[in-house]
Image 1 (cartoon, rainbow, N blue to C red):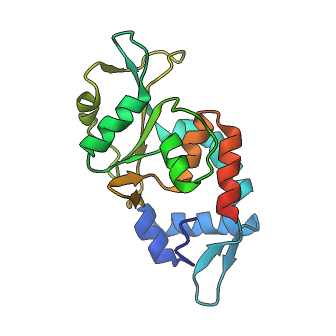
Image 2: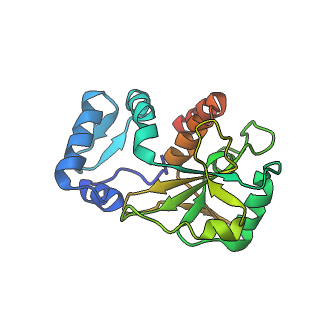
Length: 201
């Protein structure tokens, strides 16, 4: 999806941090679904956007991502745009823009007015991460304790070995897969489908 060309198993292991048997199993599953092409060079590539596997991934993403949502404890109206500006000034290491800002990065015709919340992807290859930078973004933010809350900020830990962030100017953006997972979580189905079409082309 990042247009880096065919990949070797070794490269996939290095990027994901997964073992050889895990990578081999994943490739076999993609091949059985007709979504993967093996080349004479022993490298692999997707035939097109893997829609069947993607649907399976979406059904599991809620339990696998372990996202952390934040609300404004003061009761004032949420202002994700202000948080976005502060993020641009702070630039915490290992953290990239996801959700709507990343959707706009990957698709210049991204169709959505405003910013419903700020999604940030935090590179956490060892599983845990330091969320201390959230207090620097806004000291009034608190971890949400209710599913009915409408968060102003959501952190999505990224456990793979390599972050694969893309840079535009001085800002990092999450990769297309993390971006699409954010859009699905936001129920921005039409925008996610538009991005998939763009990536497919």
